[in-house]
Length: 213
Ligand SMILES: C[S@@+](CC[C@H](N)C(=O)[O-])C[C@H]1O[C@@H](n2cnc3c(N)ncnc32)[C@H](O)[C@@H]1O
Image (cartoon, rainbow, N blue to C red; front, top):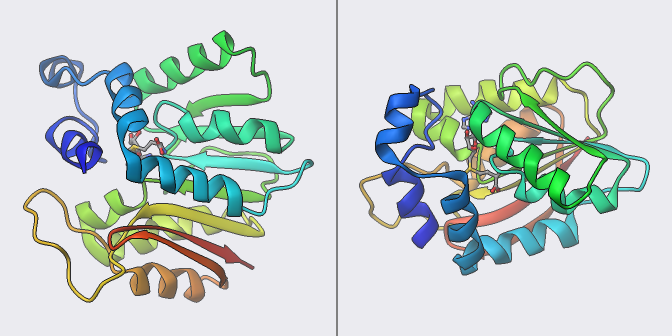
């Protein structure tokens, strides 16, 4: 999968990097958008998220790990407003500029992490697209649990995880990332008081889980 390889070869780990490191790697938000556009699995996952996420017109939606805002900007037409949060300010700025160019006014982008999303207002739905697996990759199940707990603390009625995770018994070997088993993600959501109400398997390593309180 093109996107997976590029992301891991470049900058998108949860550990903040210096500007020098970012410049060195040279993977820009424009590169990310182009790669996402060309990645058939990413597009299928996005389409599944948009089709199945139970988002209503009056909802406030948080897109955590929003990156360049691809998902947040798509969701904007479906709800009252979207709050995009990420740890990379440079990418947030790019996302803001995209919103401005497209005249989408009901989206805002600010710094925030899984643990500390930086949200004051009441939230209806939390969406995480291609983002939460990074917590697992970095710190295994405990880090993923902490990340999910941070989202649960927002008290949403629904959490949508459109992400990389293992649906098969074993991970297809690769040396650049470790994906959480789908059962682990499901159990952590269940432990936090959510029930899985929909599962869409895109490939053996990408899918959408919809968890409702
Ligand atoms: C592969 S990108 C996905 C971006 C976007 N959600 C999408 O679907 O295109 C993963 C994003 O997660 C963000 N991220 C990684 N660790 C994070 C954390 N602890 N808290 C918030 N965002 C994080 C990265 O900065 C990056 O923008």
